[in-house]
Length: 171
Image (cartoon, rainbow, N blue to C red):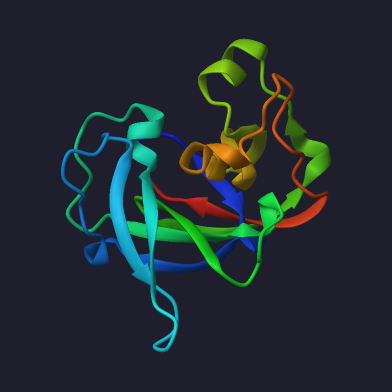
């Protein structure tokens, strides 16, 4: 979000929906972007949506064309992996990346306290330089919205599987 380079495991996301469908809830915390109606025609439900820009401390406004809600399922926290559980509003999804977990670096303790939803940092070669991509853990993100599912330790976020696809989020 903003100038932050981020990614989430693709297998934790059911779908990506336009942010225009998001309904802002009155008197909610800035971290809460609102509610989104999801599901099939016969099984509609509302899910709560977090704002990734607020989580990252991005204070300048998004571009007019920015805004996608990633809909996470509950598989990461032991719930039904076929049902939507919560959403995360991001600027956009740039691409799908293959992750080699050997390149995922553990976060320093100070950064872990500031961003407990980050599983690690991935070095990403791009145009002759190396970019640092924050890989977010779905279970920790869900724990922000549903505290009963939150990771209760100071240990690093759940490891990202060794062979996984990541959704790289655009800035």
